Image (cartoon, rainbow, N blue to C red; front, top):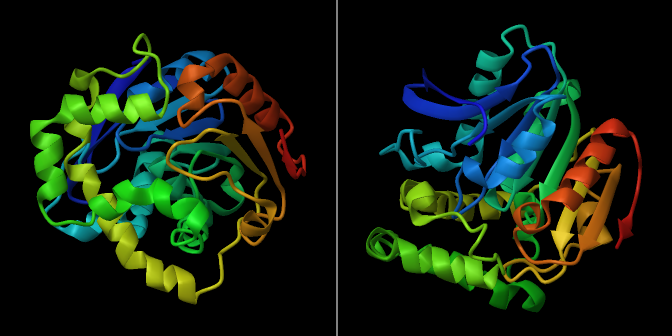
Length: 289
C-alpha cells in the first residue's frame, strides 16, 4: 500500500490508517467496504497523493485496527467518532479542507461522517454504497431484496463468523466473481483475511439502526455529492433521483459500465471523475450515464 502505516490508541482502541502525500495539502479520506482493506484504494492513493494528503483507515476490527467486545463500536456513531479522532491526528488545527470517498460499507460511514464535518467537508463521493437512511427505505423492495441476501445471512449469530474464519478464500472468490473483478487485480486472501470476521458486526449494528432511520427524516448534507455506480452491481440496485434528493441538494450521479468495484476495475476513469469533481466541487447535477 502506498505511504506509511500509522497506528494510535484512539478512544481506548488501537486504530490504524495508511497516510501518504503532503501534510499541507487538503485531506482526501478513503473509506473501504466489505470484504476489503485499505489496499482496495491503491490506484487512487498513487494517483492523488501529489495533490492531497491521502488517508486510508482500516475499519474497526480490520487488520491492525483493534477489535472490540462492545458491539456498538461497529455502529455509525462510533465509527464517526473514530474517524474524527484520526482526522484530528492528521490535522490537529482542524483547518484543512476535507474530501471524503466511501465504497460499499465505506459509503455508509462516509455519508454519516459528512454530518459531523460541517463546512470542512468540501466534497463527498459515494461509490456503490448508500447512506443508511436511503438503504433503509429500499432494502425490502423487490429491486433490492434479492440482491441483499447476504445482509440477511450476516444477521445470523456465529454462523457468518465461522464461515469467514474457515473459508475466507472461498468467500473472497465468490465476492470477487459476483463483482466481476479479474484475478489479476483481486485482493489476495492474505491482504484481507484479518478484515473479514470482526467487521461483519457492522451489518448487525446497521440493522439495529434501521428502525430509527425509517422513523426520522433523511438527514441532508450541505456539500456537493458525487455518486458513482456500476450499472451491473451484483449487490445493490442503481440509485434514483428521488431517493437521493432528500440527502443532498447538490449531487451528480454517474451510472457507469461495470460492477461493484469500479475503482479497481476501471481506475483511470474513476480517478478522472474524482479529479474533475474535486476541482469543480460546486457543480450541481442529476442522474446521467
